Amino acid sequence: MTDERAPGAFPRAPVSAVGPTELFLWILGLRKRTRVSGNSMLPTLSDGDTVLIQRANTAESGDIVVCRHPFKPQIQLIKRVADTTSEGLFLKGDNPPESTDSESLGRIPWHHLRGRVTSRFETKAANS
Image (cartoon, rainbow, N blue to C red):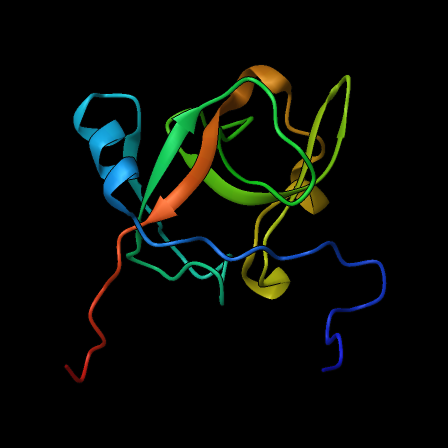
């Protein structure tokens, strides 16, 4: 099997389906639900997908996170962490042509981090 990632690209871990443990944690209020809007995270996450997030104040390269937009606080960004420094997160969308991310916004300060995506609800295919 060949690695089809671009040189310098970071690993793209899949997002697992919501299982019994994640569902239980959501019911207990230990996970928050949010909906993906847009195509910036294709093929990992699609427009309309619903994901669960775990509140977090740290993240590692490769994690998919939810952050507040640095200039429009009412907007949430769902992106992959490409790099971290003491100043903040460098976020990238898995689908760069469709992504507004750190390439245009710069580093996202740590205090904008809302949480880490832990799983997503399975959606039925349109032809099912």
